[in-house]
Every structure is written in C-alpha cells, then in structure tokens.
Image (tube, rainbow, N blue to C red; front, top):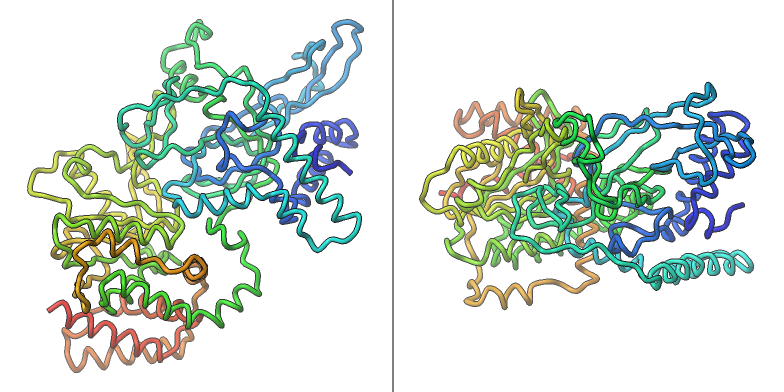
Length: 603
C-alpha cells in the first residue's frame, strides 16, 4: 500500500505504477479514481493534503497532491491529449507504452514518442478556469489556515491505537518534513508588482497576466483545472473543492511569446496567449477527486451528518434568541429590523417557477443618515457572521466605471468577469447613502439594470456581444438607504433606534462582537439554517389560503397576492430560524403579526 509520502508527495509515482500493472485501459483509470477517493474520504488523511488557498504559490512543491477551494469563473473547450502513447528508447530501440494522464507535457528523457503508432490513444479532459471564492471572508480563511498550520498535530490525535497511531504520526511528519525541505530550497519566487486599482476582473501582475477576479481588489489564487471525468457537469459560478496533481511545468513558466507562433493568425494568437498564462502565476491542477461545495463554512464538514442536523434542531430556538439579541445591538434595539435581518440572512432560492426565484428575500433598511460610517460598519458585522460578503458603496463613480456584467471576449475566447459574477450564498451589502445627485452614463444605467435584475429574479444577463445569456444566481442583497431604495426589494423596514445611538460608532462597533465561542455558534447556526430543507403540509397551505380569502373579503387592499407570496417566504424563514423543516400554523400567525408591526413602523 503506498505510503503518505507516495500518494501526497509523489502522486504521479502511484499513478504510474497503476498504469504499468494495468490489465485493461479502463481498469487502471478506475483504480486511480477509487484509490484517491478512498484516501480522501478519510477526514484525517484528507486534512494532510495541502491547500492552494493557504500558501503562496512559490511555496508549493510541484507534482504533489494539492487542494483548491474555488469558484469556476470560465469554462474552456475540452482539451485533447495523448492518453496512451508508444515510446522508443533512443539507445536500444526498445518500445514501451506511456500515459500523459494527469500531466501537462510528455517528459521522458532518453525516449522518443512514436506519434504515428496505431496503439496511441487520444483522451479528452474538461478544462475550467477557477478563482478563489469571491467575497470569502477573512475569518473563513483564518480558520482554514489554522487547520492547515496544525495539520500534523491534528493527525496525531486520533482514535487509532498502537502501531496505527504511530504510523499516522510518522506519515504526517513525512509531509511536514518534505514541505519544509522544499521551502528551504533556494528559489526565486515570482515578483508581483502592485499596480493602480484595476477594473474588476483585470488584476495585472508584473508579467501582464489577467487573473480575472470578479471583485475589484481581490488577489487570491487562480488555477486552470483539468477534469478527466467527461460525464461531470461543471457549471460556471459554482464552488468546488478540487484535489489533484499540482503542475507548474517549466514549459508554461514564461509569458507567451508570439514569435513561437509563426503562421498562426492574429485572432488565434490572442486566444493562445490568453489560454497559456505562466504557470508560476496560474498553475494547473489535474483532478483526481472533486466535490461540489454546498457551503464553505470551515466550522462544519462539507457534508452535514445527521447528528449535527439533529443537534441543530434541538438548539436552534436558543441560538435564534442569542442572534436576535446581537442583531438588536447592531440596530440599536430595533427588534423588527433585527428580525428582518435574521430572515434575510437565512433566505435562499430553494426553487424556481418560471422566472420567479422562490425563497429570496431582498431587504431595504431605510432611515440611515447620509455621510455616516454605519453602512460600512454594518457590512463588517455581517462579514463576521457569514462566509461570503461584499460591500458596495453605490457611488456614481462606481456605478459608471465598474463592470457589473461578465462579457465574452471572442478574441481571447474567454469570459471577462463582472462584479456580479458571484457564487450562491454570497451576501451583497449595498450602500445607497453614497449615491449623490448626478448623471448615470450608459454603463451606469446598464449596471443599475443588472443589479435590479439580480434583486428581482436572481438573474444576470451575461454579455455575449451578439446576444445575452441569462445566468441564474442566489445572492442575498440588502440595501441601506436614507429613504425608500431606487432598487426593487422584497421587504422594506425603517430603522428606528430604541436605544441612544452612540456618538462614536467605531468605538461602539469595536465592542459589539460576542465571545469567539458564541460567534462560532452563530456562524454554524446561520449556515445550517440557510441550508435547511423546507416542506409544507397541504392542510396548512389550505388554511393559509382560507385566511387569505377571508382577509381579502374583509378588506380588498389589506393583502395582495404579492403580500401573500412575501409572507409565505418569511413564514418559511421563521420556521428555519427555529430549526424546523415544516411550516406550522403558529409560524404563520407570528409572521402576520410581524408584518403588521413592520407596516405600522413604515407609516
């Protein structure tokens, strides 16, 4: 059985041995998949695999096993390669068979590839361009890094006994020693020169490589990921954890040179340059295992066990009370705004009916004074609770200059990112108090329209130049404004402080966070509540319909069909906040009372 040193530090050696002992072309590939799947399903062994998210690229040893937590920003055409090929020994003339699976290039010193051999087989792999998850909050990164930094110690503390525990310890230390040896080897890291603030998605390095982060100013790792399972449906904007062979082959280590492409037309040359960035800045990852990420909360396992769900059901009511108290301090004692914010934080699109995104709850909090630091401080608090956020000051300059909508560049054959290219579960805090009198130019108008479409139907039309292609999202939007927002929102509530507003908001907010233990409990609560399933008994729905009919009969203007839809969404969120998966009539009564109080406040 390959040791940790083999399968993590030298996965190609393990793969090559399986290839050389193969009985058929499909059998060895299946063995590779099963071997790594079995290893990575073990949480302790999985924790030994380093992550691209936690280290500078020049500190990562090439051709080792690596993880990458990311979002697919663009999808390329399939890539064809020599899956198996024949070689001839240049000195003896002996022939043998090799494979370039999980490799970028064929590197067999002393051998020549027989390109015309009838035994050569062509393979196909999916290629996607991935970026670190946009808007991933600092606390998420810090927790993941803390797990990585104590990787060997975490592995030693196991429930294994005797020799197995000793082996766990030795294998973990092998990984650590090899990584430290690599770090101590003299090398010249790539020099990245800071530049002026770039347009979104066009962060430039000193080698003029576009890193294509959707959010301006973000500069996390990026990677070209190659997936060998052709049946796997990979979608743009979805988040994954890919594990594979980390490749920074020297052939890709220098910028693209047009002089190497004599006879290639200019348009194709632009595409080749765009698709072949230096691997020192944009490495390649040949995937041996992958999993879609329903959430990126490091305090929870990727797949939620039944025991955690059951515990959440028992404790949700108490954690809800704790979170409401915290949110009341955030809103200066305003319980209705605190409740509205709780519902908003738990909302998600759980189904679609035609163009309607069912489950979303965009929120507009009014009564925010202009020129206040409150919106940014508010956004910082939200960022400390959930996993992905971004704060958008809605200034004329931002609206007119930022590119909100992704656009296809046909010369480079790449999707240029836009600010709204965000993964599901991202929270967007929009500060409308920053919008002062002035004119929106055509780009500004287009950006407002894109933002409105996101908030109305959770849909953004990506610009493919000759046509628009709708991409569906699940981004929670909250707008802070002085009066009613110009953007369409599902729920509007006015901030009416019940306690005196602090004169020094920065000092007040610095004292606001609860203990780390409580903060982590609230983070787990919000993730589990957001992910929860939902159902409604037909008998409950029938009674709600009767209630609606009776309300319309007594006062035709008291409840519209839109009101009913909004209240049904809020009722679901009321149930979720209590750890319940089914709506009860008591929840419906609470929500109706909440909405009446909210409307009274708006008068």
